[in-house]
Image (cartoon, rainbow, N blue to C red; front, side, top):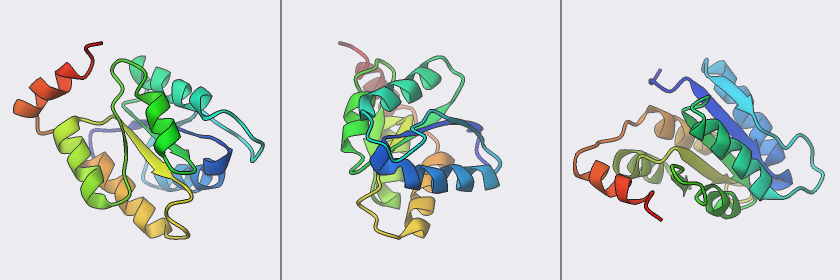
Length: 149
């Protein structure tokens, strides 16, 4: 297992069912999960859950987060409003790997409506994200420029 142990997970109603699958999967891998909601299929506002995950990371209670909505885009935009959060929408392993290596992304955003029933692909994207380390070096200089507003 990687150095990542604590993961904040959140979703809106469109991502609720996938979030449940993701939380179960992460639990089998031995990660400590903070489930930031939502907790039903009832319509909710995705920025609320992006904020909850961002606050978990910024408080250092969680090292990374996983956010899920219909496309992954809304939660990614919402999370990226917080200084220190680097959320990336990933739909394959290569994107998950490169966003960790070069961008030091600390939130993986997934689209529940993007993958169909391909849970194995989702698991492989999550594994790649969690097990890939930041390269640092020239990428660290670039990453540090992201928090300047």
